[in-house]
Amino acid sequence: MTDEWTFVSPRNKKRSSKPSRQRRHHGGVDGHNATTNTNDDGMKRFFDNRINNNHPKPQQTEAEKTKDRERIRDAIVDSISALENVWMSSETSFSYRLIDALREVTTSSSAKKVEEGAGNKSETKNEEGNDDDDNESNQLNIREIVAYGIGNFATSSFSAPMLQLACVLFLRRRAASSIITDSNDDDNASNDNDIQDVFKREQDQVPIYYYEPCILPEERDLLEIFHVAVLEKNEFGKLRVQSMRRQDGEKASATTTSMKSVSKSLFYMPHCPMRLYCNVLWSHWESLDSTIIYGNSFHSYDERTLSEEGRTDPTNGILRIIPCTNEIPIKLRGNRRGDELYDALNHLETAFNDCNIISFMVDETSDRTRPDEYFASQDNENGELSR
Figure 1: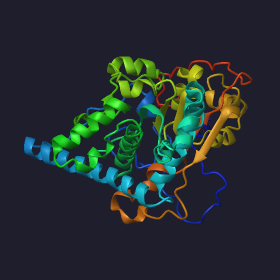
Figure 2 (figure 1 turned 120 degrees about the vertical axis):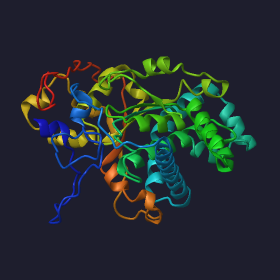
Figure 3 (figure 1 turned 45 degrees about the horizontal axis):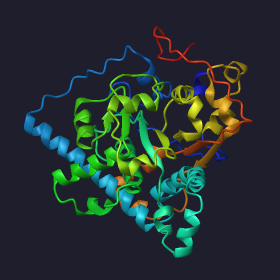
């Protein structure tokens, strides 16, 4: 049963005689890159409360720490720039496909609500020619981003976890640019203070709420530089976005108030364990129509959960919501021009293989019976899950 809950295989893929590629160069339970132990897959990092995150590190002088932090910061900024450059230059790049999929799921329902509220205003604007189609096509109606389980991004430059962090910062920038009228200011940032001001404005408009159970002290420092709100307590994916907003003291501004009724919450969860997805579903069951997940394919979980025990588990929210689930695969194979030009994007496939944009089409005919709450066992020696 453990494999059914933790492993996602590519769909409709032919078996290859070549050695399989490690799926995840992700921070493991020891705070370093993950090993080939497939029994972990992020399960212990989130659900085993006995993990000790205080790992000894070589002593460094303050000057060495500062230099190391600046090196990692610059590598993250370079990765963001690479994602942004290929997004602007190639429609087959990973970042373009990702933004395009998010735009599709965040504007399809939002546009209807805006039109209903605006009455005939939109028609008048179109007749007068004042409607900016380009701005509308680039709009992402995302209110906040919740990032779970990225891992240790500060252990090496241009690693998969670092690329995952850079990507969520890139997504925040694109979503914030739908709101900030002077969004080109980031191109004019010339020093560290200017860059931090850009990140602060982006966080004010579209906040990132971040949790990683094995976070390192230097990573906290870097996330502060990038103005990311770090959640302090492991809620096992059960914390609702409304509580995150209260904890962060949500900043309401005139530019965002009109969007809040139509914007969606994005849960950014590449390669997280299945139980974490189930907990997110459980905690947001009444608001799934405004929830988006970027992570493992739910349909693949459905295909691989074969046992009667797994399929009848009352805490399995994924199988319950499958009939209402829409997935857009973000392809990383085949024709993908632009990505190969940047060394910072070398680990794209490792960071995001088999990840989809997942949205939910819930209406009055859908089964709205909420799954049971899941509780992790605290005395399980393997860090596996039992209820």
